[in-house]
Length: 485
Ligand code: ADP
Image 1 (cartoon, protein in one colour):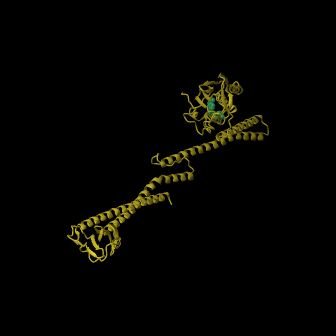
Image 2 (tube, protein in one colour):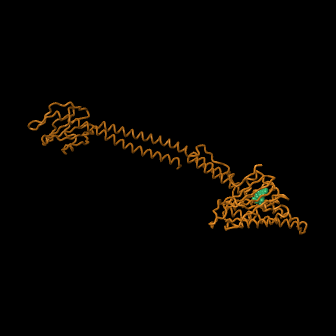
Image 3 (cartoon, helix red, strand yellow):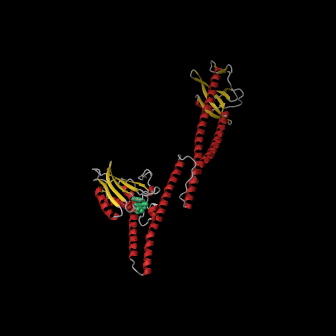
């Protein structure tokens, strides 16, 4: 059964039960009130009747005057003597040779009771009459309950008809409103089915109502999940396309050179060099991919220990000097003695990546400056070059995996795979640090890394800020800065 039908039945049953209970209460109250009214009438009539009777010397009863009592066609009286003979009764009562209520008559006490005489229901007031404590007779005043019964019967009918109408009306109203309330669920179901059938994650669930009610919030949450899924799916697609593209290029070069050697039947030294270069490139890429995958799944272990950052920078400076050779001038402009808590190998990897990028993307005769200083509670590492710079449209994306600025993309020989900065971002982030970039095209690029200084009581590794690499560009509030041109 549908939720709509279940809700409608539930509301209708609830309305029915409430109306039934109210009906029973109303019926009982009206019954009590009507009976109380009849009882009052009987008591007043009895009081009035008694004023017209006198008791003689020998104890006999005699009617002096029939008091001015409203003996309507519904109110009657009888007076029975102690010998069980009818002494007198209402005029026009006809032949009744037994008390209105024989049981009450036998009881010899003042009591109200219901009784039936010849199919007529009566309310009877039984009053034993005494003179000086001596019983002389019994008076019974009775009223027909026909009017009360008719009234109560009409009341029951009215209650049932009203309740039935209210239940039907309530069912119709609740059917309509639950239909309206549940309509977005139907559209959500349709949209979800449509999305899974068409595999189109760009579809969103439309919702016209308020976004603040339960349904609106559910639709928003569902759409947010879809957006996230779409991003993940797109990034996975892009990742696969990038990996296959990056793998294909060196493999094609290797295959081409092997074919050439087979064709010429000579071990060409140049071809062998190229094959070796491309194999190195593939090895580097596989290593980077492994790191990337480990970082992404949170399985890249970081071994934190107190670390002399100045020593590390000097080491990188010396190693990179070899790479820069005569082509680019590598200079150390400032170096402070600084201790931090960090993973030596991973931070060295970050520095090597930044310095080798600076050397790679700086043309012959250019300069690369390294410096290490303090900035409030942080160590500040700067790698600055006066090379080609990064185009403004590429700047927000350079920390994304596989992202390479268009210019370096075309210079595939120089550029890597676009993984270095995304891994660097992850490593710095997991040292509670920040990495910033500042670049102007044609003028140069500055990368700045902030890492918390080692506190004297810092024995524990810092808590990582984020669990994974940035799936998309870091937010505008993030580490990227752009120099105004
Ligand atoms: P790659 O291995 O391609 O260098 P990275 O992730 O290290 O990958 O860098 C991403 C991109 O950022 C590079 O392809 C390049 O376009 C740009 N980039 C990085 N550093 C510099 C720099 N110092 N000067 C100019 N462009 C840079």
